[in-house]
Length: 117
Image (tube, rainbow, N blue to C red; front, side):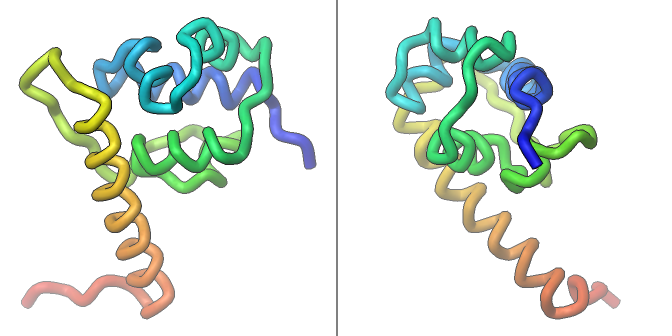
């Protein structure tokens, strides 16, 4: 099944805007030109699997949700109190999100998270 690049681009834009990030910040994070992010979001260019993996980690959602036809909701969201988010901050956030996504997956495999009683 081929992924709909317009749908992927729309999801990336929604997640980026929800996180209050600019195309430039995403471009710096992916180490690409800002115009490429614009083309991704408009569905004019397909996105590499490496970039999809990086964005999924940044936005804390599995890659499968970015390429599916269903809506995308991050596993959790973080509110930033500054507009001065730097690339190092985004890289650190992506690492933390990968850990969180791995923990969510481990919980699913173990039959769900233990309830607090």
